[in-house]
Length: 171
Image 1 (tube, rainbow, N blue to C red):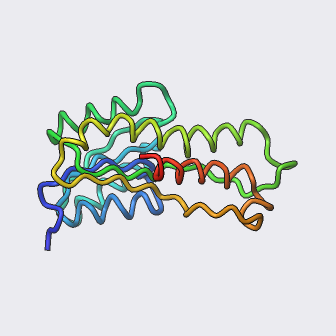
Image 2 (tube, rainbow, N blue to C red):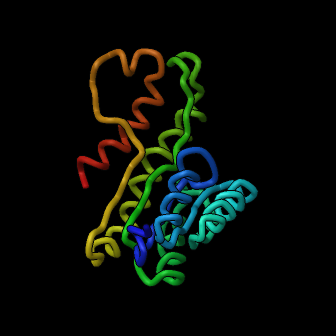
């Protein structure tokens, strides 16, 4: 049953793990998928898996944190598919380290991919999603929970993931 036939999706962080599984599942359900990631070899595996299910999946190699990258992804989806119905913000960086063990370079990476990348991709897709009959943005992020337990062992990572969650509330 192809419940998403005629729908067009962008999936960030689609080269492995949850992102790959989501891209393949969307394609298997009939959606045309633009799989976005920074790793070309792994991205090729995602496309092959999606196509093996009979779906349509195009790769786009880019870093969602770079200025203009989200617009490039939207442009590629519009050119290939003619519209955008679904955005999956899956791109994410993780470091389950304590404050003293988290270098600022890693902190910046997590915030630029998780929070900034989610915001940029959502912002770039919104004008097209608003034209869709049943648009969706899905951020792979946790519910906001301000209990110390979620912050105490890896505050930088939790802050970055909660940034994605705040995009859900704000948009």
